[in-house]
Image 1 (tube, one colour):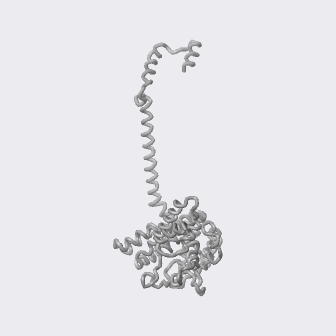
Image 2 (tube, rainbow, N blue to C red):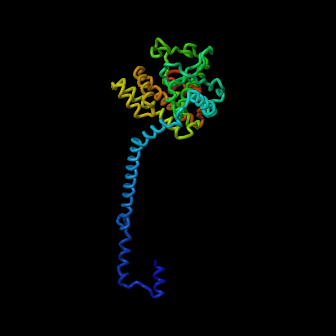
Image 3 (cartoon, rainbow, N blue to C red):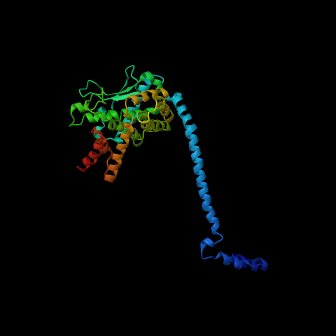
Length: 357
């Protein structure tokens, strides 16, 4: 600035003395010891308030947009997916072939990412996909092979209700029922030593009648099944948004069950209340939901074991990761979880004890 004034003086171009007479005092007032007393300080303070106002408004708009998405966009999208012809199967044969291909050519090659090599043999990950006998109300389930080999392991599908199966739901279903879920778990367990035959071949007719029947540790078995769906992320199997929608839809169902089961058996909900809550908070069709609600009514507590079991297995995994740090081996952790069946509290202590030994 001074150089500019000097150049002006040399050229004979200067401000009048009247215009500059008060400038020295103005500079004196700007040279303050306390920065908060500066005339330039107030605008900066106002700027921080402006940022806060902006952040609050961004959050408000985002919240409103999320509410609109939740209330209108998401339900409409779920309705679209449920009714999309591309998500449906035209025949029973197409459905069976689709799942068989998924297990063999998509999931099978990725098992090496989460399972020890010694278990990567056909007996562990080959499972037959079979139609349920007529009259069975279930959508799908798994049954283990008998030890004498006369009954083969099978992934059962209700082919009387082909219209209820949607492609976007099947990756999670296959991970849960087949591999690395129930089929892999129970096949591996049946080959473990040290367990009596009556534990390896339980009678399931009245599994709720413990101790007159050998207990069926649903939280462990179904917890692993649900955890296997989570492993789909680590196996890179959710390749598109539809597969992800299927995963979150199934996972949401297991969380909704915690609410519905408690509502029915503690808060005296009616069947219709439970059915409404289930259909409004998942992507399940009303027809499938009706069968599920009747199951929850007649089998208290069973449906909540899936989510609680998964939560416990994830807790054990986090404990071991913290305990072992870089030495933690995910595949060996999975073997320890699978090589036993019992109360999850016992599983918690035995995993670390096994490592210590």
